Length: 181
Image 1 (cartoon, one colour):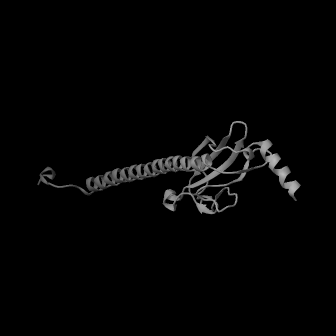
Image 2 (cartoon, helix red, strand yellow):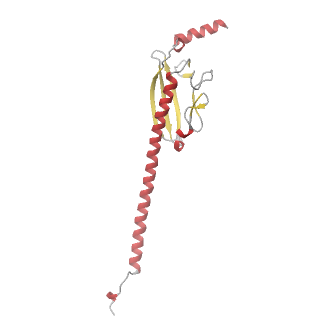
Image 3 (tube, helix red, strand yellow):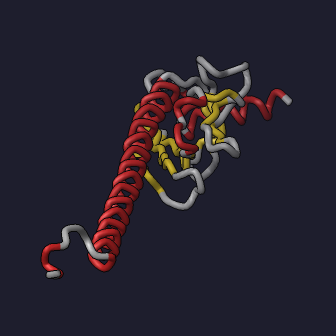
């Protein structure tokens, strides 16, 4: 009897085939995982850009139509009267522990505007009384607050400038209040 007449696979051939299939499967799984990770990262960056743009528009609108300002000696805005979120008191932008931007204790955007746990923060808010311009620094970070996904610095012109919005006007108003007391 000749050995060449036997048909079929030997055990060694079968084991080699299984080993090759396992290696190809592992490479495919790693490729898919890399693709999913890359997709999630790009979606996070995209959502951060959308959130940054939306917050820029909302903050710009609030500042553009703001009322009387409270500004410290360095030009930092410590409070202002908001037409939409004001309760008669001066208010300022704050950030909740969840990373939601608030004005007067109220969220300026709904919670769904912060997908994947991304967090936003208004870094600084200054006002130049000569040019009537606000300068705002805004950043959006990942859910762990480690990586900055988007950030911007923008200027907003105050439309309804009053005499109290200038350094001289604030000093005059302070003098009047002091003389009344």
